[in-house]
Length: 619
Image (cartoon, rainbow, N blue to C red; front, side, top):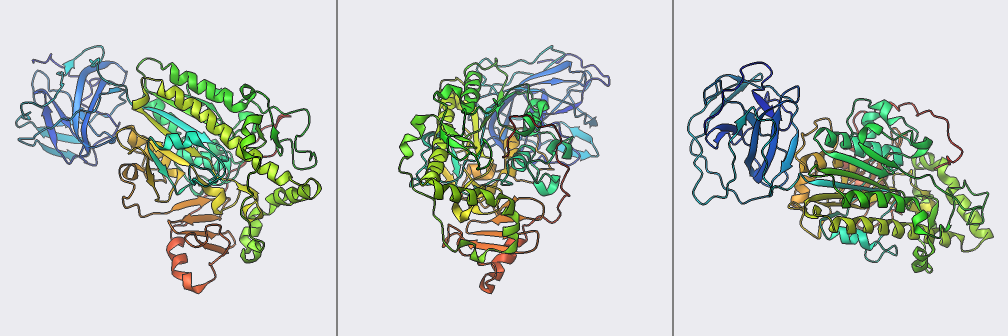
């Protein structure tokens, strides 16, 4: 096919990157190929059977070249590094072509196809300081019988040519749950709190059995997961920290997808919800339904008006599930899944508020837990805890002490508290089930990546502690599920320790977006492909400056700001009742874990200041 003469002016890009990368650091192990006899394409090293349709635009977003399909070599959801070169003026050759990386909007992915490409002659690539000298040798010989759908590149067309059979780029359903701990049937079939829909979701993909938050508090945990930066990097350590002020130019994961052409929507609690939503980032969404304000019964249901605030309450309320915060949030997401906007890929973020306090759920969710057991406790648990542990949780001790006072006056109150938490967790699970039903009914079901995680765990009295805000296992161990069609094996489980700073780079890689070198976490894609893959790193958690925990497959190591330590052997002591940090027999274990502590720690950023509303309550 003969090409029209290309415009030979500065507005016409010579090389356009699907990743918006430059090629100053060559990463092209498979060489440069001449595809379809006309358009040379640099293929990545690891993207087997991947067909990509996209359009090329200049800096003024004017289309110049339409390339229908590029098939690359490798496997799975790889990050693309495919570059398209324009042909020389009235010639089908390239000489001293300079890289001109500009913005490119990917329009669609094609379905995976069993394509085999055989290279006869490799084109020599020379890349030096964004200059590339290319000599086109021979064309690629495509063996007969191959399934190939190349459409020749056409210059100066107004839009891309695309196949009617192509599927859209993978949608993303991103679910974050508040305060859900590990005492659930998803992680332990014997656990009393039943989460059938989380189990249903896990059967579709991979469950990480040792997943941990980046921080056991809402604001620093969510800020870390949504920016890919640890609290020790940003200085966002507490629930009042001004996270956006700390990283004003950092793109959230949602903004990364917006830049890639996704329709980004959300509802519920994605960022910290205090100060009337002041922590929310409007620039991260094209459409967002805020979490509905908490409504309260006329008086506290637990019969303890002196205990905490209106939020420190639990019971059977409201009567109708439709009146709950999470039903409204899930309904928005059900509608979004049921009514996709054309072929534009969707990134849908859903923030489920329960089982966050107050522990309110309709009556039917309480009934299965009338005889729920109490969490395991040890009478001398605090006898070997160091000074750092006492200092860190001192201002939260009133939760446990207050609960014991209520129990003395109203016997059964503690069990009612546990029952209400369980009811809220199951209610949250039911709302997730509604979204899964909507996804199942969607034509995009098999092309949707689903990620579910909790922002942190929750103590229900273990270690004589209620709430989170601690570095023990119960505050940090969370449910975490990834469903990636074509990558994860249904019903798979991974026991490698991971933390939520990995969410950001993982989603970028799975969806073919450019990698971000500033991320503190590491992509989980190798584990998604093979849960037994070598990982070689623990999960790291931080709560307030100077306090960190390191979790390997067997051990939890904690070092506090005053230098005091804890060490627990989870093979022998899953309840963390016996602190081994001062036992010299475990000095090597302490040393091997302490090397993973942050080497530098940012100063704590200022708190976000805004007048609180009357409905704002202590978290």
